[in-house]
Length: 249
Image (tube, rainbow, N blue to C red; front, side, top):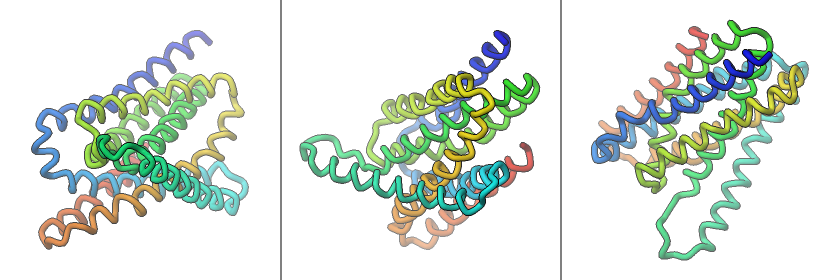
């Protein structure tokens, strides 16, 4: 059992480090990244929607005995994030107007990604409890799945007003929620599978809300035909990346 704990912990640490590796090359030239930020936000829209509809919701439905309940939990996730953003806006307007402007969208993406990473930690832990080979396969799937999403998240954080170094650090701290998820998996054991069927659709609802309510309206501000076409292509690329990962998994 000790071996399982060690393998699981190493796997989760590697997954957490992806949040830095995936964006490191992009962060070298911040001026170029900001110039093409709209493309990365478009990619994030595709990745978030693809993740929700191609990965999280189908997985939740597959492990659920009540499709209506699962669908209701997706809606609950959307409403939770709607309420959370309301709260962040109220808090934001109550702050000193001289402070650095950080759009609540950035905090929402950190929260939703933190929940997602927490779930990944549980899934990895439960997989290693089943067997080491299953755990390794799951870890590889999570890593492949995380890279495009982390790039998109980093772009959203920069667009929200965070500095490059702050965005990298916060993205990494959000990724460390996977460690907490791993600990919960070990505490819950097989019950962890049941827990994920409840939390997965809520996380999916959060991703849908962030993509549709926050990111797409940002993309709508671009009126230039060339940029609009590139945005659409980037969104499709993000979705296709998640489709490809579904087959790889």
